[in-house]
Image (cartoon, helix red, strand yellow):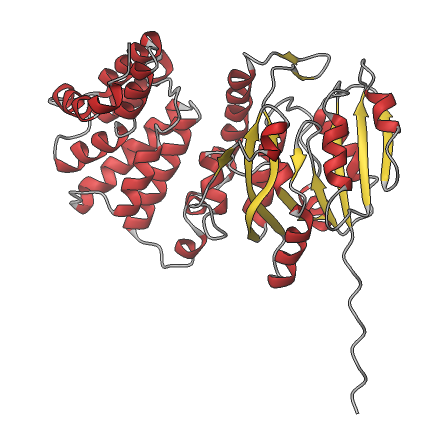
Amino acid sequence: MRSPMAAQPKPTVTVIVPTFNREKFLPESIGSLLEQTVVPDQILIVDDGSTDNTSVVAASFPAPVEYYRKDNGGKSTALNFALRHCRGDFVWVFDDDDVAHPTALERFLAAFEREPTADFAFGEYARFQRSAQIEQRNYEIVAFGHVSQDNFFPSHLEYCHVHQPGLLVRRQCYDEVGGFNETLVRSQDYEMMLRLARRFKAVRVDGLMFFQRQHDMVRGSTKVVISYTDRIKAWGSYDRVIMEEIYKSVDLHEYLDLSEQALPKTADLEMQALLQRSSIMARKGLWHHAAEDIRRYALLAERAGKTSLSDKERAIVRRTFEAYDTGLASAPADEFVSAVKRWKAGTLKADIVREYMHSFPHFLARDLKAGKLVPASKLLREYSTLSLSGSVSRLCRAMTSKLPLLGGAS
């Protein structure tokens, strides 16, 4: 007779909360972790040399909170300090100004029960400014329904959809990929996400996992202070550093979805991967790489006699300039613009340019409706930078179709 199997021990969870001058927001953040339907086994607050009353606030929380203070060195140093002190099987990195959904941890762990071979679980979030908005459900949900286990890595090369508070990771994964990059003052969570995404298996969790607070306090460290108005510019700068390394170290086929990587290599898949990498590099402002890949794509397409985009390629190209501030009219983009314009005329070229320009009329209509004439004129300049014969008339037709939206504009 077979003896009954021993019950598997309950997995333990460590939450890491790096903090710097957040006495105002920390109580609500930690409170949301202590009020989880499944309470974490360990909550590590690492104070990165705060100069306000963060130390007093942080030291007041009950177990399982543990408080540590260190000299200021930036968020990555605080995270690495905490990783050396965590005891949990799983690690949940949480920001000191955000609020966890009450059932987030319970749903994270349930996802691992359903998918025991998964290495990390991820879910969506919502943005808010005032705490009352959470109670009133008056928040902006940030959905990324297209992100899946199959395309997690290439979709995150395009954009950092998942943030650390929406991510539960097996601790051994951090052990294997190494600590957070301490040279990055911003985007360190993005760089870590890419390392995890490239190597490990993801599982998606339905529903909101946390609420991301929008506020105008400074970011960074004591040595590198980043104002609220400069935050997006700083992200872009650090993202470019990350993507330069990605371009050197990641093979072209890794820009495909996992299911596509398992297929025999073909010219069509190589072209799709080139288009994907070009799109990613353009989004990050690495125009020389974007130009080189679009030139290679054009050469392969001409050899293959390709006359139109596949549905997958069309979606990739369309996403290239979906970000609001594209920088397409800037001098560094000239090489990319020239590479597109020098492409042999034909239906494929017209198809690609049309998809590149897809989002511009929407942004123009939005700015004009809001009376934002300066941003609208900047977008129009960007549109004309890449425009080809007949594109201005297409713009006019596109804008005309948006006129009902502009009825209330002054």
